[in-house]
Length: 214
Length: 214
Image 1: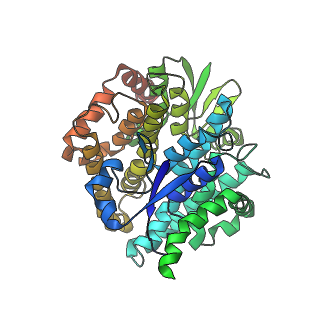
Image 2 (image 1 turned 60 degrees about the horizontal axis):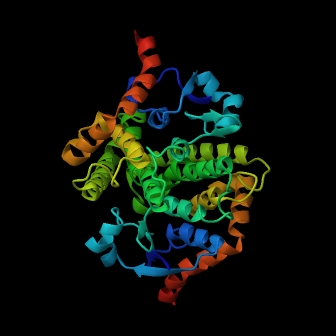
Image 3 (image 1 turned 45 degrees about the vertical axis):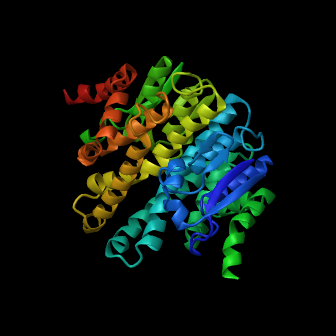
């Protein structure tokens, strides 16, 4: 049985964007059953957990003797077992993998910088000064991505793990109106999120948070 | 024949760390011959180049009908063709891929933030205020990575594409003395860079820069 780790609770700004969402979604798309180990900050900081995840993050993925961390790598591992997420021809596989790296290394880094300023350093003078540069860089990347997507449904000629990661990355901007300037990207994100597998993944991440708030 | 793109010239702070270095290194390890298309800022901004690379970066990788961008994805594609870079068993492959994503998504992002402050916004007030936070985060990550590496030679039980990316990421700190606090990481980086394939890759990236400076 596959086991993934996830947080028992996170503040509202993080609910629905914690990175186990990506892994849950990939598992739902691939039709692989899994169980969740919900962890609290104490477990997260423990040497037992750190031995599995050097940076103390979620999720980890465990199956038999294999333990993996890094949501991108876990999604890639799951995707390599399912044609729903990754084409089987070498070129299609390479292109889909390209979009996975692009989402995390050319797009997410700027979104994370904005989220950091807005959620982790609110009201700081340096954040106020630097925020316009970050927003400008994000707009540049969104414009480039929109041009590249054009009028297509997905980044390649079909849904892949690249779209899965890219659309979860776009979710990081949800506390802003930045995506409104790019209607084709907004529609693309909605198209990805309309997939039943995404809806199941989101519901399963949100469930323990909602229970605790109830 | 494989063709990659690279810059004809970059400022000294970027020489030896531009991302085509990673791809050249992977090609050298895999023993795959390649040619380089050196580009200038005009080509980089052209619609012809942008059609191949939506973000206008280097390198792109072209082979037959396949065009790829994102250095991480290109290295992964090359690695999937060579046992020198990626184990052939599924678990070994997944673990090496994990380190590739870890290097780019859990480590490089903080190093890039520091490089941005030091090279792109020198003297800015916000940079001066925020720099200590960034340095602290980098030290946290370096400490975690050093713990994880322990006394081993490589991140897994042999050299993989994960070490290739991680060691090129560690190069980003070369304008600082941050790595001096982590002697095992410094030795690890030196061990990776001692590989003849790395030396050939570095020499080939530096060649056009040195010609122009001569």
